[in-house]
Image 1: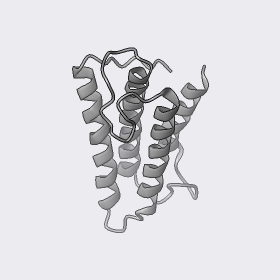
Image 2: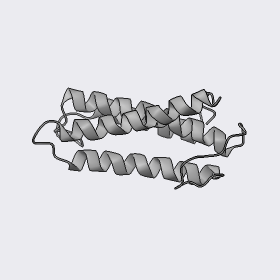
Image 3: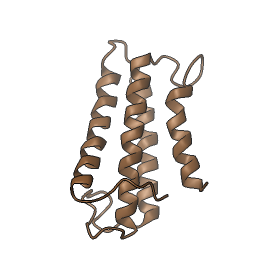
Amino acid sequence: MGKLTVIILLTMVIPIQASGDSFLSDWDTVDKILLASYTATWALDWGQTRDLAEGVYCCHEGNSLLGSDPDIKTVNVYFLGMYALNLFVADAIGDESGWFRKVYLLAFAVFHANYVEGNTRAGVEINFSF
């Protein structure tokens, strides 16, 4: 099992293990489900973007922050950084109203799902070639 596979598995375990007095302890069940959904769509998008960066497909990256032809290191740093940032922001929201965090997490889950669907429609498969 490669290092990236371990990293992905660990990031997917975070929402499941968040409980008690630890990180994300004030999150309710819906928050954690939305985080798991965001994590899943993020991982799929990351995998497809890595394939594009490796030249598996003839398409170019559409994310202007990555550029049209990013290398693997740039893709990895971007996706891991954005995941950490979004997790931090979602936790920092401190959702007293009960819906700010949910909307934030749902928006990012839909954002990544949209790109995964668009990539798939363009012929980019989901093969987890990490």
